[in-house]
Length: 284
Image 1 (cartoon, helix red, strand yellow):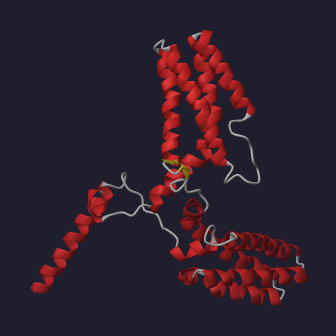
Image 2 (tube, rainbow, N blue to C red):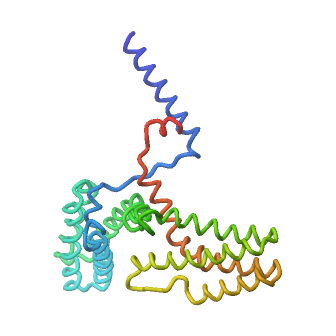
Image 3 (cartoon, rainbow, N blue to C red):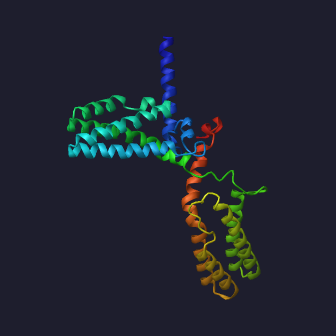
């Protein structure tokens, strides 16, 4: 009788938990995060993007094996299969936690079929191996890219007293102050805010080149400078429509284009890196 009560209690608890999860499914998403040891194969812990290059090799080798199997070119098929097996097994060497995710038997079958010049079997095993790769990519590819290939702006300092994040907030406030002051007819404050924005954009540009070393593009660019000058003229003597057009153009050129690349990815990365407390879990 006691065991029956115990089992009934467990079932009730499971049903309650399942009900709570279902009720809050629109408020929380489950994701799989990669093992922490993966970090040592990415910059900055590693001088090179070792993991990434191994993935590129695998993708190229998978394509080559399929191509030469379809062409029934045994010599090249066997050469590329050997390379594929080498780099496929390297995954477990780099990240032992992912050993169990590898379909070693499929890889061995593919090698054997290649050695036997059994082209049809090679294509069958190749398809099975591709499905295994795709399954892992579905779980981890996007999350890994966000974790290890997205810049981290939290530790960047404009000056010893001013962080990058605080500086970006200053720029946002200056853009909005220009709009507010112009709309309310406060020309002097709008112009002084524009001058401050111009100076802070130059300061930001000096920081951007620290990362953009190979493709150094001046910030503010010549087009941005022209737009700043046009906005200054419209604030001094132009119409509200001209002011709005120039400010909107500047916001796209100087803010939105960079934010589209960096801000969205950085925001997602912050959420991934954030430690979730027990109280946070309870709230969900």
